[in-house]
Image (cartoon, rainbow, N blue to C red):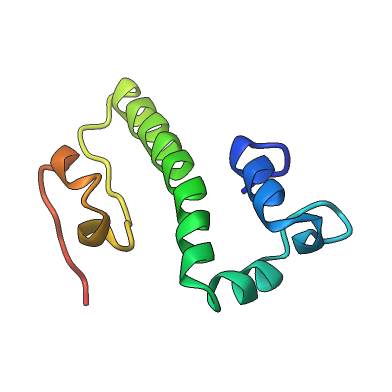
Length: 96
């Protein structure tokens, strides 16, 4: 989450400036302590970050297709749990 991105601003609004490092970046360790101790706050963070992540993924996929690539490989944790992207995939390979 880059500073000044839409997700960054929402995260800071909901979790406070105390989660920021001196350079303005999000302190992942502090934010992690908050969200892993509260399922509600973890859900809130996911509701902020997931739409932005999906937008960026789709932009990059489109860019590769415009460049002429026939295949794009995605490494997607929780692919089946979220069920948002599966309808766009032709093949799925699970590595365990």
